[in-house]
Length: 222
Image (cartoon, rainbow, N blue to C red; front, side, top):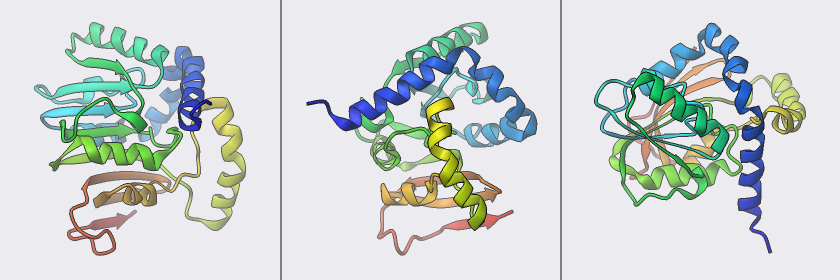
């Protein structure tokens, strides 16, 4: 019998294999509307051994500071092939591997930083993915996330719930994820959350205390 979790991840991989050839062009308008700046804020503070989850076509590679030791994974071989070509053009030394964030092939505490930009909207089981991130990041390290989430406005949230299945089938991401809740449920302590509309810029770490009494959390709304 097929594992449902593996089958769901395989479906995600097929969707991104299908759109890999035009993914960069599709995302270009979003970059003009501030997407590149948001991505830069997320990855430019990465230090040491860094894992980028869902590296895609490698659009973040030129945003990392010199000296950061980057490993990038993606579930889509077609996307990863484009990341390899981009790294070669940039002369960037980076390890690129096909892997699923729900089943990371790394030992516990392997990385000082884990980054993801607009990834957990597409992960089949985001709580399982976040749990793996919490496992492989060093207890003294950090998880840096940029994600879009379900709108907090009740009407817009209702619209996102209705449209999300169609968006997932056609271009990949869910547009109604409750990412903050998912990350906490997986054992991450959100130490900083910047909220701008549907965008969340999050700094997290593995929880070391009961999640209902997190210490040092700072949340801002803009």
